[in-house]
Length: 197
Image 1: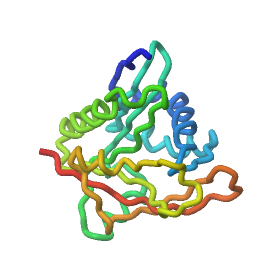
Image 2: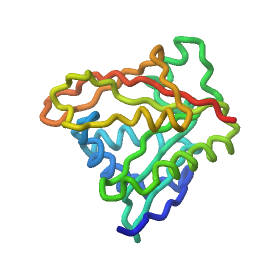
Image 3: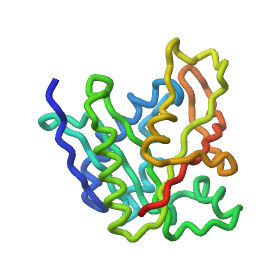
């Protein structure tokens, strides 16, 4: 399996890749724990935030010309209220907080160390913007969720290894349509944070 090439794009340079990024997100996020039933309309709405932020970035993984993975981010100040609100409610300023959007990678290319490269690219970019902290959020699912695959391993140990800590008091709410559903479901997403040094 060829090792993907990572390219970092910023601001308006993201625009040509938005349709491919949407398709990649819809495919990967169908997996547990997100169980996302993506639509072109929902993706257009979600990704508009990145299209409108001149400080947004994405580390894109290509094999030849095929997009096989992506890791996105932008300053939290440029994010939608649903993600900023938990911080503002606790008096945490978001001006120097950088938010990871997502990391998505096709299964065939996992286990090659690309996650580490994605992390480095986002952290380097956040430093270039003089950000002081990084954060991301992950959906909360019950341990006995009937959709949990046998042998499922959460990524918590990896996030801990790279210096990110759970923030149980920082929880966002965001709705999306789940596979087989007919109406969007409200989901709870807990934040993880790391100080940039």
